Image (tube, rainbow, N blue to C red):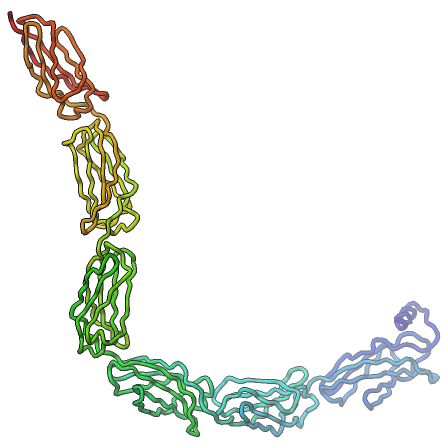
Length: 589
């Protein structure tokens, strides 16, 4: 603050008597071996005599009468920080207030470290070196890089020490180690290198052991180098065999994927295969244990399969002995019910039931259900024989009645009967038995047997050729495959009206001198729709009720020995029939 005030006063021409003040003392330029400084002298009326610049153990006198001065200090050490002190001396021996600043020389790439050394122990490589001879003062830290010879993958670490321990290195490997010095500005100098071989150890477990091909007499196996100590593998050992019968074969070292063919082997046989690495000291590592089977001869299928219902929820399955089925190791029995989209299977691993024959009872089945049963013989590796099958039904239970019985779309001569299969065990329905009963005419009944090919969610039956204006009862029951019948479900309805046909066989039944008796019969079509008959003759009309199949009506009050025209019309609510006419004579006295 004091220097600022003095500077402002000088700018205004108001300078107090006394020495000036050094301002803005700072580094204005630098290089590998020099630093250039600059400053201002502000205020005062005492002329400057000289400046003395001090740093480290050096001192330099500088004569600069100007307001702004510079000074370049040469032959400095690169990569070095310096503190500078500037003392002003005025005429008359007056010493002013000193100023301080700092600065650094730039980097200069150091030389390569010397005397590198690397030694391997159990899991690490210990590396040491000495500082470079050239520009060792520019060394900020060291970078140590390592890689296995022949591998481009490199791992680098940095340290401020002259030693480092490289951890978790690969065993049995030739490493190249490079060391370089790094400046404060992160510039690397030239490298120095050394090599070292890590300690020997047993290889790890070979990876990805797989059987890629199996024939009746051979097994082909592939495997990869172990993840642990792969470079310690000098050769591979493979042991394989059946239980206690063990053979051995040594494979040459091949880096990467390996393929091994084991032969000659027995067909239909399970083998254990062990693959392990062996180092140069003939020490074996842990083995990868795997199992494989040679290709099988296709098992022979059973000569026959016998299936019989065991009840409403079970089926008994049996097959004859198969003593020569060498590759048969299990039997798989599968069944489907034709209802659910799923196949159910049971695997029987008892070899004795193959050689000596046997049977199996399938339980928990649905009643009244068609089942297809297949049997296959399986080899040890699961190779199936050709399937041999048979089919049967489980026994029936009494079916439930139909549900939601209804009569709809009723007209004069037709209606539709609808119903749902029973929700409980609809598979028990083989057919539907339907009775259509005319309650007004006992002779006018129908019976229909409906056998759907499959279960239908809603069944519609259309019945026609019915009598108009008639009461009907519809009865429906379900019938199982074995003839078991449900209880009847029933509904009633009445058909609509229609126009009747003409009356039939109108005739003169008898006559007197004053009357004629007529006879006719109900219309052939829609007779129950007739509400009355209209009788007309030359001199009169009359309406009579329709009550019987044959109707007699006597027209009285006629003249004797006369001819009359008579007509009869059937009347109904929807309309009348055409009239039927005839001529009748009264008797003479």
